[in-house]
Amino acid sequence: MTSFSDLGLNAALLKAVTSEGYTMPTPIQTQAIPPALTGRDVQGIAQTGTGKTAAFALPILQRLGASRARPAPKTCRALVLAPTRELASQIAESFRAYGRHTGLTVALVFGGVPKPRQTRQLAAGVDVLVATPGRLLDHLNDRAVRLDTVEVLVLDEADHMLDLGFIIPIRKIAALVPAKRQTLLFTATMPPEIAKLAGGLLRDPVHVAVVQVATTAERVTQHVVFVDTAAKRAALRGLLGKNGQGRTLVFTRTKHGADRVVKYLDEYGVPSAAIHGNKSQGQRERALAGFRAGTTRVLVATDIAARGIDVDDVTHVINFDLPNVPESYVHRIGRTARAGASGVAISLCGPDERPFLRDIEKLIRAKVPVMAAA
Ligand code: AMP
Image 1 (cartoon, rainbow, N blue to C red):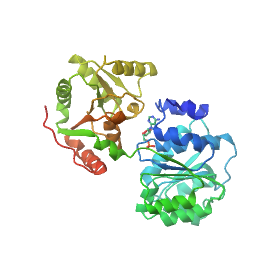
Image 2: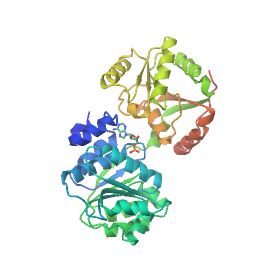
Image 3: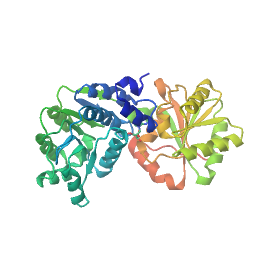
Image 4: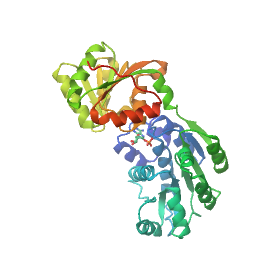
């Protein structure tokens, strides 16, 4: 199995990744980081939730950190374009987190807020600029920033850019970036317009892709149980009682939630263990070993911790809480459909979680069948 250190990342980045609680690279990271580190262009098919931000942020930080050239005033060395302010903010936050030991600077510009603060940040020059296309064009028109020193250009959620009518702004921006550059493009789907855009922007790209999440969802038998929040613990116990000897992965939204579930199950004599970011490496490994060996039938995990879990025959996934990011739902239930097997996923949905369920059903393009509470 590949670890982050096998990917060729430097010590400053490995340290940051460890403090983020990442133990293993995700598939898109394993595929995209090595070619990106060699300077190749990358075309990636991946959705949010796959770890794609680190897949492009880590190689960029390594490249920029390798030459200590300070950016000149009003310039940037890497430009990341994202369709929405939410995504742009998340990307900037990730660059700051992964780059915290590198001394590299990150600026964020998006529309809907006054410009002067952004202009001041650009004035000094930055290593990484994360921007939505419309507001970046404004700043370019104001001559608050120039793009003639950009070494790396990233387009994230390119298909969403298309939906929002950003293709022309992107072409305008790309024309201002030197032709000799590295370009990384990520998209969840590849409609013809995006294929054309990619063809024009990328040079001999490495193609990387992770499985479309919707196909996982089709292999798992899903149910939702509507319960009051206060009745969830009893409902969980009922479900575990029915599952027999299978291996069950229980998901909670928070680390504390995971600990509370373990404590509760303990009181009822159901052996379980929690795995999340506050646990030491040793604790995590012990919990996983017990789960693999079958001595701990129930593993309670948060989304992030679950990424590194590689256990093949999980028979049941129980969502104690519904995730607020719909893609996480698909990742969660996909833990029970490894290696072509099928599985069962049951979600406990409290009254305040109905909107999350609606988002999930939109993503998987199906209604999750309702099951009566135990
Ligand atoms: P993204 O698809 O980039 O939006 O990432 C989705 C989530 O996965 C974010 O919360 C990241 O912090 C998290 N993440 C990214 N890479 C890893 C990893 N290798 N291990 C665990 N979590 C990760």
